[in-house]
Image 1 (cartoon, rainbow, N blue to C red):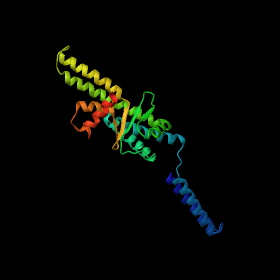
Image 2 (tube, helix red, strand yellow):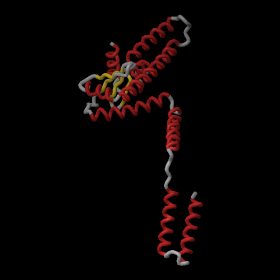
Image 3 (spheres, rainbow, N blue to C red):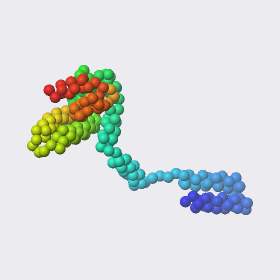
Image 4 (tube, rainbow, N blue to C red):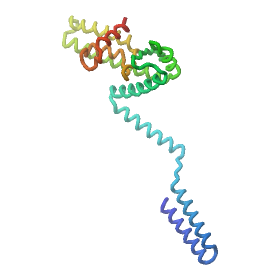
Amino acid sequence: MTAITNSTTAGTSAFLASQAQAGAIPSATASTTSQSATTAATSAVDTVTLSDRAKAILDKAKADKAATEQLALSFDESLQKRTDALTTKLTDAFKKMNVNLDDAVRLQVDKFGNVTAEGPWKAKIEKYFADNPDVAKELKEISGLNALKAANAALELYNKEKGSSSPGSKQQQTAWSNYNARSMNIQTLSGVISLKDGQLRSAALDYIDSIADPTGAKAGPDLVQQQREIASRLA
C-alpha cells in the first residue's frame, strides 16, 4: 500500500512539474497542488479505521487471553485473586461511607444473595449491597468457594484421623463422628465472612483451620479471640 501511494505521489509531482515548465500551470500552483496531494496520500496511509467486525475479533482475542490466564491459576490462586479484588472494592466503598475499619466488619450472605451486617453501620452496609447486587453476588460466590475449601480440608482431616484402621473400628467411628460435626459447622458458617485488617476472612475456613492447624500460621494473630468468635456464631 505504501509503495503504491509513493509511486502515485511521485508521478503526480512529476506531471505537475512538467506542466509548470511547459507553462500549462503556474509553478507556485503546481508546487502547492503537489504538496496537497502528498499530504492527502500520507493521511490516507496513516489513518486506519477498524470495522465493527475487526473490533469484535480483537475484543474476543483479549477475552480469550484473559480466560486462558485464569485457567492457568490453581483453585487457591484464583480464589485469592478474586478475594483480594473484592477486599479492595469493599475497603474503598466502606471508607467512602465512613465505616470504621479499625473494627472487624462482619457480614453474612444467605443462599439468595442477601447480605446482612452487624454493628452501628448495619444500615449503611446493607444498603450498599442492596444497591450493588453484583458485589453481593461476588461475596456470595467467594464465601461459597471458601466453604468448599473448608469442606475439603475437613475430608482430608477425616482421612488422616481414621488412618489405616479397619472399617467399623472405634478409631474410624470417632473420625466419622468428628467429620459429620465439622461438616455441619462448616455449613452453618458458610455464608459468614469478615473484613478485618485489610483482609476478607471466611468463618468456615477459619473454623477448620483452627482445628487442623491450631498453632500454625493459618490460626491467625489471635487464636483465642478467633475461637470465641467462631463459637459464638455456632451457638
